[in-house]
Image 1 (cartoon, rainbow, N blue to C red):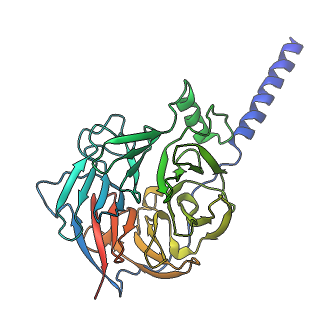
Image 2 (tube, helix red, strand yellow):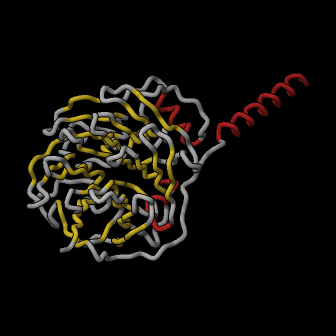
Image 3 (cartoon, helix red, strand yellow):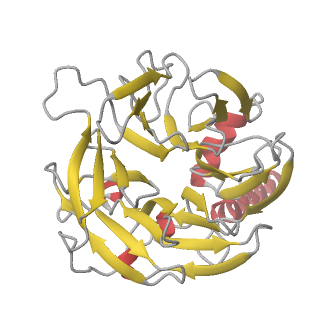
Length: 359
């Protein structure tokens, strides 16, 4: 009897130690000090881009992504009749292509293709890249929406369950290889066709692939130190190949070189909580601050557009919480045209707005 008791105590002790180890390293979202909201910009005027306000032909859903294209069109990614973490394929179009000069729809597609589309980019060849956080894939489409390629291996038996456990116990082992995504959030595509994926809600990494899908490098570290991530949410690159990551739960932007080496971290409180990021034709970095609403801060919600210098200094902030023109409710992504106009996709307002430089 005594031996059994000793054995039982030993087993319980071992289990307790194992659980403590598995739970170590959990990083909670960072909340910053309050900053003064700046509602108006001296440089930009805003307008409702799509869909038209109170339109009976409204076919959009949660505004998840936006990209401008070399052909001059704007590609707006939304969730149609679905929602975040949708369990079934969305049966309505999820990509709306429109002319930014007239706001007329040029094309719509993406129905019966995605479950929960999240990020979009149109590359220099007018190919369309979309991440899906439920299918755990990166899709490459032609400019009419036909699938050219998909990236991301299918889950093995037990992978999904293991990932759910790892959400609570960060050190829990998960049977995955480098080509398996875990809710990828965004993608940025280089001129040579190589691409970098923000892999995102569960993997906390960025990973670069060749144009053929061969892995070249990854930065895979969970935490809040330089070079670590807690939800890399948006990603972009500039002409020199520097990579900018909206590290959402760490409430900062991180900068990496073409080989994945960490260069800088920008965490000024006025940057807020970056959701989406893009590089402008002027070389400045543009960020949408989605605020803390989805992290439980509902009393004083904020949403802003933030303009940063190439060194990470805040040049300008504008926008305020609301559903009127010029206001924002969880801006999720943004994209810039060559003339400096900004297009912003909003989750809660289910729309895309245009902010153009006033003459």
